[in-house]
Image (cartoon, rainbow, N blue to C red; front, side, top):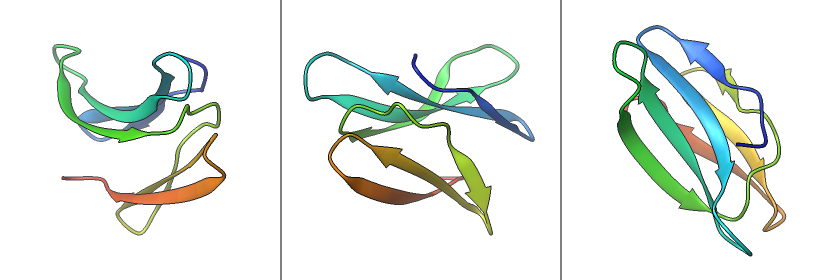
Length: 71
């Protein structure tokens, strides 16, 4: 994990690096710490932010991703 977590309701969103050229945005359940969903991206070094139901995060693939916080 290379970014600060974003707590929101019953979930915590965090960006991760999973090796060279790979990463993800992960939503964790705050009650048990298990992944609710995972979106594969380039390596994520930036901290996620919330805007109108979307989780925004930049990745090392030079993109800003907007992902639905629920799905």
